Length: 91
Length: 93
Image (cartoon, rainbow over all chains, first blue to last red; front, side):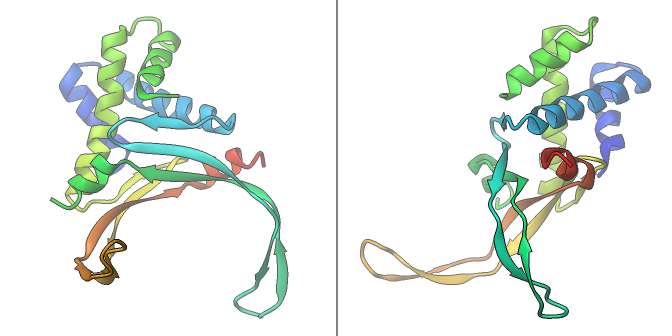
């Protein structure tokens, strides 16, 4: 499934034009991306939470050459699925 | 930011949308992702990321209270892989 399928559902269920529906879906993801970029988390009840986590420097190894390298500190995005979402996948 | 705040922001940025319509749209977005995952489908949102279902194999565990062995059946779990654009934006690249 891609964004186009979500657009199609909005078009069918609410009756906005396809162009409007596409713009609205884009806007939803734009708002989410901007919020996460600012380091703020997104909490979607019944679905899950998107949280930005800070990772500090750590030692790593290039798996191909075996060479030791330092993996630099970075911010990563994590998704923690809600209990509801996890349960629905196992019914 | 919660789901209702997301809907509120969507309604604000789009002048013609009512609060109710914005809520419906946000709900459809996440409901359709959930439906697809329930059907075992993969969901790919360009620039954002992709959702897949991963299977966790069965395992033996112990009830920490009684020490009794219990077998845990295989389970399906949702997995999100951050897309390149978002990964870079989150890390201020």
